[in-house]
Amino acid sequence: MTTLYIVRHGQSEANKAGILQGSKIDTPLTGKGRNQAEAVQQRLKELDFSKVYASPLLRAAQTAHIIAGETTTTYDRRLKEYDYGEWDGLLVKDVHKKYARFFNSQHNLLPDSDKVSHGETFEEVTQRLEEFFSELVIKHADEKILIVSHGFTIKLMLNAVLGIENLVNLNEPSNAGVTKIELTPETKTLLYFNQEFS
Image 1 (tube, rainbow, N blue to C red):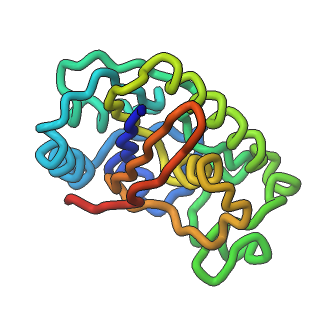
Image 2: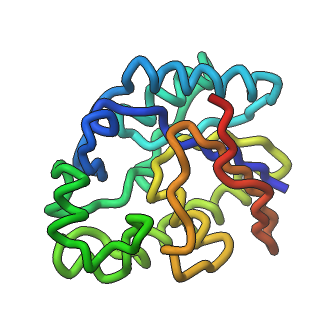
């Protein structure tokens, strides 16, 4: 089986500033974000990752480098953050206030916001992640893989694995939260979600 250790990037400058940060916003890690990634590195250092995949966005790339060191990282655009469209770069609190009908009480994004934000649909991202997982099973049978991605994209990975559909029932993972998934050609199994090591 293929074992995936999926890490959300550490705190970024946009996270710290309260800015909604989708695929169009590309800010580096803060000092806290680097410390979070280093804490994950300490917890996972005994694992012998055969491959590292990361989103090409800077915050994810920096996190992958801190955790994996000199292991070669493959940057895959399918791991980029969900595209919030015209909301990308706005203050999170302003988006929650102006577009309250698209969020639940936990501030989880509701479906069909793309009709207003002109961003991606949940289905589009879930499909590309399902394709990514299918490739990993073929290329990396019986290997441990590190993946560094983003909060909402990781939620959509869980949709690809568990078929959650109603994503408001799942909060985004914390910065540097770790999720473990096992894949076989026939099965996808969640072992844990959003373990915090920092």
